[in-house]
Image (tube, rainbow, N blue to C red):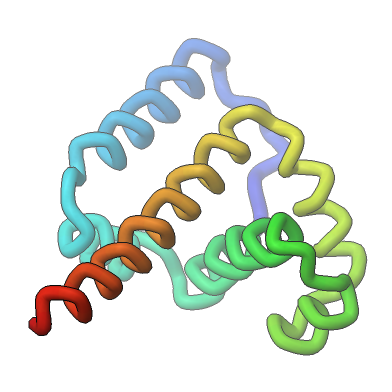
Length: 117
């Protein structure tokens, strides 16, 4: 993904970034987000962002670079870049959301087994 080397006016940049962030926040369910992202991002962009999240998730779960490289078909440099990003608070909050979803799904399955549904 290439970005122009010409700098935008700072206030315009802030305005368009805020508009984008607000749009994502307003897409308040999975189907809306999936539809928007599927139309907005190229398949390569979607794969890049999804792999970035998967790398972080697997690193947090203790998987090795070799395992991640082999399974996600990414370079060690990409894994290292993501690992460096993981110290940022926004990234950590995102991972906590993923883990909370994982935990909720696990307990949902256990409860369904228990009640026989």
